[in-house]
Length: 204
Image 1 (cartoon, rainbow, N blue to C red):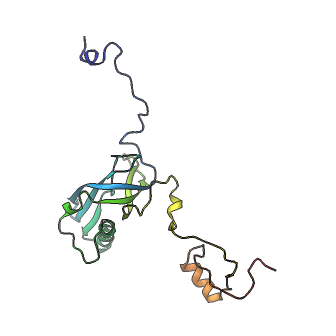
Image 2 (image 1 turned 90 degrees about the vertical axis):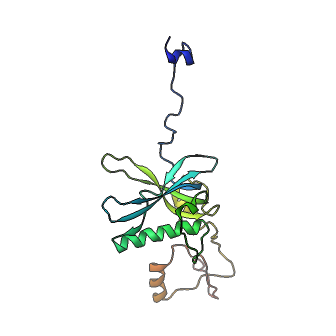
């Protein structure tokens, strides 16, 4: 009798269902509540600097205990000032989501272990022999990022913004200068509508 038969009997082993739903499958794009479970400082192979690599463990009901990383890490030290600025900015967003203030200093990477927050997970396309993989791209305090959403476009505007049409506050006509400014710097939806005594644009 084989060892396998000794443990499983004559029926042997059959594959469990949902093999694709394992730790190697891609997470859907969206927000996830996580806990930081590991932080490493990794030297770049070419000697250009060091990366801040963070491992997050999902704590939500769905996908619980799945792992996700901040890609290859934040280049918080780099010979390129541009790359270093980007890396330090991303690290700053992470520490802010973990509760650090502007004047607080992170002196030990281990301080971040067990910090809880919300992270936004996207899919990074693979190159060559490397497959597509998940990576975190945004960071918010726990509860402020929202649960996972199948459609990431729903997170493009703050959830607290409510657009209403007021019967007593029709939109005022914008000057050409204002129109040009709005086209270049304001969202497509007007969040606040100024008051005016004129008629509504749809009234004739």
